[in-house]
Length: 121
Image (tube, rainbow, N blue to C red):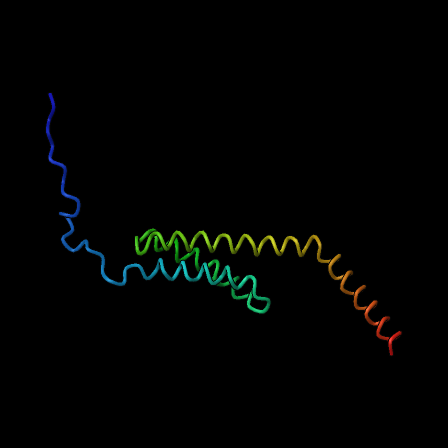
């Protein structure tokens, strides 16, 4: 025997379930922070801003997803923020591993350039 239950209409319980106009703000903010944070990674003097923007994008994205305020954009913010943090971490690791070599190279180049300049003058 089948008992036929009427499926409750989707939003009947919440007559005011229509999201307010600015409901995607958080998600959009997360996405913008993530994208800008990623882009600034490639701008020499603005990389420090990425250290603030990328984690911020992740935090805002998580809040947006939980509150469903621009969930898709929030998730985009989490992803771009995470990629940014990953690239920052990668840069730090590369810097730690190869930092000395790079500094040695630069010093070498400087000395060579200095020697060439002395020869030329």
